[in-house]
Image 1 (spheres, rainbow, N blue to C red):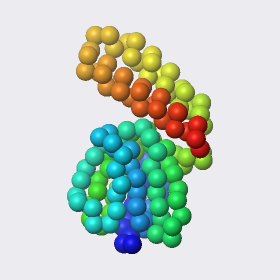
Image 2: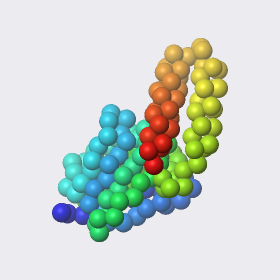
Image 3: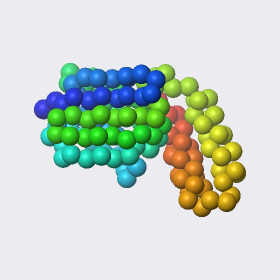
Image 4: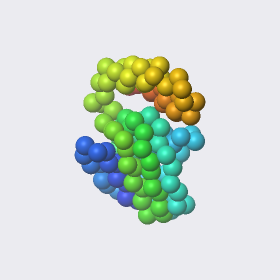
Amino acid sequence: MADFNFELVSPERLLLSERVSEVVLPATEGEMTVMANHAPTMTTIKPGVVTVKAADGKVSRYVVFGGFADIVPTGCTLLAESAVPAEEVDRTLIERRIEAAKVELEDLAHSDEQRTRVETFLSELTQLNGILVAF
């Protein structure tokens, strides 16, 4: 199987930069698997789990809280708003983000567009919280 370059970057740090055989991304339009020679694509990322299969077959997971991915035939770069290795996820972090989104939602009664955006984000965080129970 062909390998390609993958980088996962958050504002805090470069989490991963290596040759991989596949990456599963939580794109806003649905999960997508990226492999070598993928068609050029840019997509937004919703809160979720990124699964990375390294060239040596080792699988690692990262929790991301939004961002976007730039995919080209030779690689993929995911610029995350925030990201951490799955084993470092603190459940209270997600619960705090859920509470903050609920507070923000209460303050947005005047703007339907912003309200919809925050409702979607809150739903995605709640789903992510449920997914992490399995880890």
